[in-house]
Image (tube, rainbow, N blue to C red; front, side, top):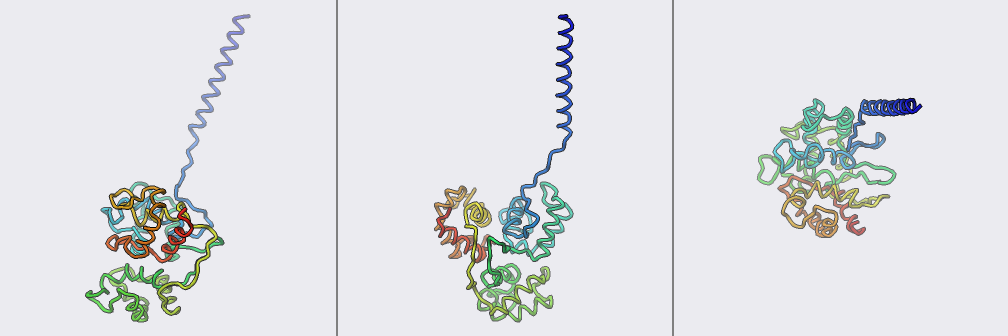
Amino acid sequence: MKLTISTLTAIVLSLGVLYSCKQESKRSQTPATATNPTTINSTTTLTYNNYFRTWFQTNCLTCHSQTGTASPKMDTLALIKQNSSMILNSVSQLRMPKTRQATTKEISDLRTWINSGLPEYTTSTNTQTSLQVTYNSYIQQYIQSKCLSCHNVGGPYTPDLSQYQSVKNAAQQSLLAMQQGRMPKNQAAATQQEISQFQAWITAGMPQSSTTTTTTGTSVTYLNFTSTFIQTNCSPCHTTGTNQPRLSTQYEVQAAASQILSSVQGGRMPPSTSGKYVSQTDKDRLQQWVNSGAQ
């Protein structure tokens, strides 16, 4: 009887081990679910601010920044617009990013965004921003990226387009050159979206800045805006570099909030040599963040 009990015990234990091994085998054969840190809700309009700013920072800026060694540079939306066809081609052919292959969805999202005119912001039920085109919010950035290498004081071509008034005086002439494909020179032709934006600016009376207000249901915070703003416009000099103030943590950024705002509004930061450009929209959001207590 003792022998029988011992035998039964051994059998039960063996079955338990066998069941455990089978379950472990099943788990090992189940493929891991791939996660993409830069996914976005399929119903959300793709913009630079809500998706592609972070995507480029994560996948491209280690090499394609002002401090990197690769070209083209992709630090700002203006530079990305300037090289959008090349970027899409490289990503579609899986030559970029270097560290991994872009997913089918990422390629599709990038193509959709470029075909829609590479919008910076979108409107939603929580954030409703006037789409009025002004010199400060769009035209200045376009001129700087497409025209100023030739059309500047002392440059090889006229008219000089380095100031608001001179751009305003030459607006109709510039629009015609864009429509006829004569400008910009030595670059991709102006897209229909860019021509439409320029035309809308002229039709609106060529305003320098917006006279409309922005109503936002969601507060501007360090997490939803300022952190990305600092990484885009102040890194690496004020984050991993030696420049003061140090802006590598939330506490440091909040402590220097007023100083940051003053430097950005005064045009001292980011420095003109960095190739970075802060839109009027971002200046307004930074102002809103400071006014609300820099939280």
